[in-house]
Image (cartoon, rainbow, N blue to C red):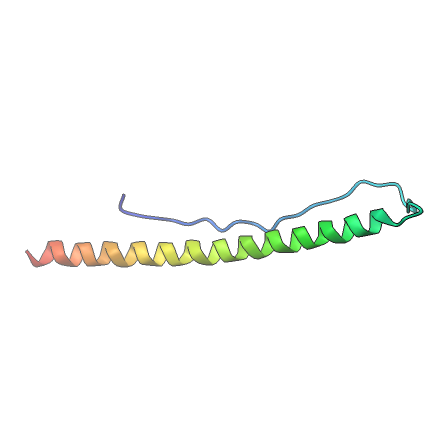
Length: 75
């Protein structure tokens, strides 16, 4: 393996198909919607951190390849 090319993950996108104004008497739908939004935000945070890790892994692999080539050419 001479090259490692990381491909960035795209942000998580979601949609809800619902008939509004549908609100139950106990307002459970609003709580579920807020939870759903929080999950989406957390997934996007994870995707962002994985993109950073991937870019760092790509840079580290490139540095190791450069070091390997340097060592091979010194012999």
